[in-house]
Length: 342
Image (cartoon, rainbow, N blue to C red; front, side):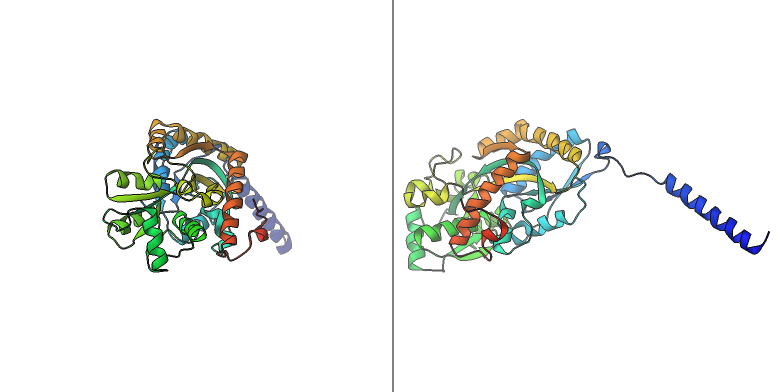
């Protein structure tokens, strides 16, 4: 056999082996096999806060449906945008879940991130609720009027704890600024848990906390609640006046105020995977433990998914993004991102 023929035989043999190996390579696993390993849950806020508490309550029942573990971790910072970006950087395969609040709907206008919930699919929105303005039990501020009068007399000197630009305490300070013409010295912490510790330690003078995070401290006397940031009182704190009740001029601003919590996956995740996750987290939402927690902490139960969840988030975004913009606190106009004015 000539050298040329030997080379031809060799090349053909290599092509045959290569094709055989490729034919034996494992095919991509279908969505029907999901999940075949543990999931990672990324909580965008610190331990002990409302997002953290509600997220962890969902997981035990969801794990039963999924037949695997969900390993939860807190990844805080930049009003939740660090966690949001981290989840978006992972594969759209349903193995990395984002547990977050409403904040991504303001990232673009605040210049925090190019992301919003348009880049994710809502697995479920569990609850929405309101913030309560609280001070430490020995604070000189007995009422909302006391706080407002002190802030007017000492502009920019009263320390208000916030969870970052765009978080609920920040939005509370913005509402007070718009309605009362007062300014605080903002001190930033990574969520409700650190804010609670800071207020307990008298490192700040006042903050706004989710009712769920504050209720036990108000009831046991550690905190004094001055007003619920809503147009009506909250059943978990029935003796605390609503801000709209005390300040009728703020009622329009308060119509869409508040927060929501949910579970999200990156956009592009296969629909059968999303369907499985919805089934699992609806089971977590409907568990007696979660329902009792929501009731006792004055949260409005939602349990919505799909287009209903997306529409709710768009309505919230429309109201709050334009509130921030009209107050002069946005980096970009909501109009740039197609966010309609309410």
